[in-house]
Length: 64
Image (tube, rainbow, N blue to C red):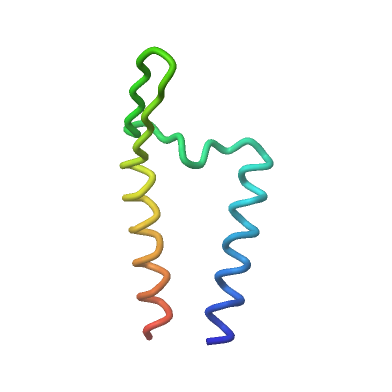
């Protein structure tokens, strides 16, 4: 459990550094954005798929 929390914390810190450096995390090509009038609907489908694949790989490495 401790190892998982450490890795999770390091992952969140790495994402924070990437966002600070200007990497467009959460605004990947393929994400759906609909703007009509004063409202905006944003659905990050490609970002969800990428995060899911990344977490699947990380969990597979921890399972071994």
